[in-house]
Figure 1 (tube, one colour):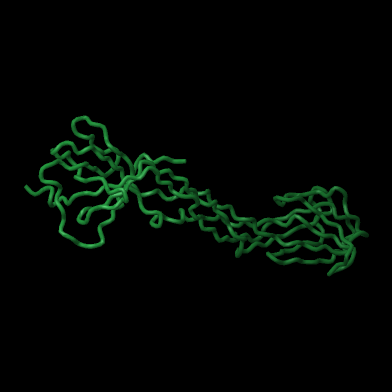
Figure 2 (spheres, one colour):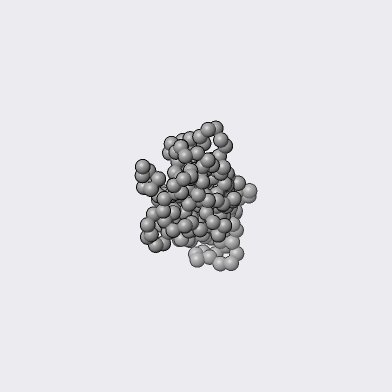
Amino acid sequence: MLLFVSATTLLACEDEWFVPLLPPPADSAPVLWMWVGAEDDAPPCIDGQPPKWEGWMADAPEGLPDTCDACECGPAACELPSTVMANAMTCPGGSTSIALDAGAGWDGTCAALPSPVQPDEFASVVYEPPTLSPCIPSATPEPPPVSAMFVRVCAGNTAQEPPGFIPCMQASSEGTCRRGLTRHEFFEQLIDNRACAPCECGPPAGGRCVAEVGLYADSACSDRMEAGFPVGLGETACADVTSPLPLSAMRATLVEEEPGACSPSVAAVLGTLERREPHIVCSYSEMWWKTP
């Protein structure tokens, strides 16, 4: 939990009806003196007396932002297909096939098969298409800062006006102010329990990826067979193979590579801002107080 130690704006409510502004009692000092601003600028109470209260004025809950900084998604990269199916029948092939799998994350370099597929075991090959990788979301952002200002209230047992302070009095037990006075509410603690929902990315879309898979009769990928041609996203291709050579290895390259994109999620603000130990004071009109 985060306990506020700095601040920036003021929340204050005026009375609903206009009435003549009331001056403070003519024969006594104000009950309280209040200062509002940045904490580092707060002056001390006069005569070395300790503050009666200190706290924070903050925006109302309904005024706080409900979303964090925008999420972003990295590109959806083109990924090579890693599987070729060798089929016992000519295209479009049949149910009997042998999977030639180079493994997930294959970079297209020469991949030798555990054991060669002999010429009499296959009559065609089916090439799988390239794919788009998932997009990587941006890091989870921090929640928007809360707008708040520091409040220092000193006892008003002196008629001397402390520089920067305004005269005020404590609100009634119901938290109301006399007509003509301005109501100010603040809290001794503001505890920020908010967090942003993690950024996420939708499924990849768009882009253009074309892969070419070559099949080889030797494990070093030097003797290429008469098979292999470009295959794009969402496509499969079947090619008859008439070579008398065994199928021993394969190699692949991306001949066209245009990444796709993903839609980012909205990082909503989760949790709440806790307000603890409230105080309410009512300030006098500066016009009346300054009148000789």
